[in-house]
Image (cartoon, rainbow, N blue to C red):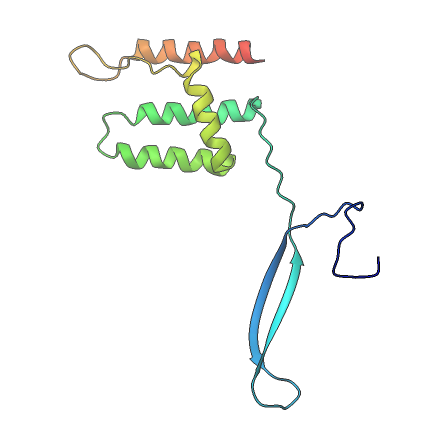
Length: 144
């Protein structure tokens, strides 16, 4: 290759990601003016992989999220409690994965919203809560 600015099409070339940091500082050689200093750091190669299968921990964390989400229903601070449930899930797995976990679990039998109120709108029905917990246990056996 005689010209260093021309790539040979027969040779593979990969442009890897880098992170640039720049600073302007006073010149070190005593001449007037400033100089631009650049640092180039190799960055991580982005791999966009998605495993649709959930781990046992992700299922447990997701079920905890949905239980907290439903337990907040009717509470005066329901929005704050639901945000807290989301924050807890998103810190245990990445926020993107947390979105997948909640989406996947919301479509399974274990996370079908239980009917938790009496017909007159009174307090939480404990029998519905028990049925919900039994459904979670059954789904855990099916998932394993």
